Image (cartoon, rainbow, N blue to C red):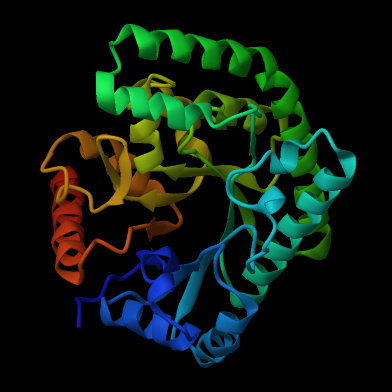
Length: 316
């Protein structure tokens, strides 16, 4: 049994593929010492059938749910989608309804937030995958990388305002409807893992400036932030000042190269870079580890101990 993790929560993405029952999945997370979970977007109604009694009994708390929740077997509403920015009005309306459904589950389970991937600038192929291939084979300073990056950035910057406007419209409606229902649930728009996806930290700030007073904030995914910084999209240390006061939750993991969801301080061996995020972790209302299956219980325990020691040292 791992040590009690207190206010820290843990995403079911770590072990969902290993379990046939939701209760078994949650029990394994409890054994790590976590009292709360984030129910991720792959949680099906079948898995929920054995999780809900555990929530009702108080065996486990729910910090957050990840849109689209529960699982929807339609890639249009999956994690890599235009979603709240769809040009197609019928699809955008469906995306809004699904986010409100996620918020209803969050409210029912006593969760504080819904995590949502709000959208992207669409490309006719996965240009991010092509860029990462060049990055890994030739390096980010190569001519091939620079050429394709310029192509990506030109289209992204040309269309970003259009999609950001529509995302803002969708979020405004979602927040208004959630408020009307009296659900005290925040919508957290997540920093993303592909360079054509939204938002960057600055794009997020533009949404918050527009929707002042709305129940929407940033879900700061640190591993994704590290990845986008390495690829060249933004600078975390510079840009985080603009969003510091708008963070409603965090995903705690780090990136090794361009591979994410590793345990901070453990798998990279870097004892310094992740320190950038300590002030955000300290202040975040919801703190969730989002780790891949390859992270062992021992890795998780070591990583958490190091994180707590780093945070304690800040207080001295």
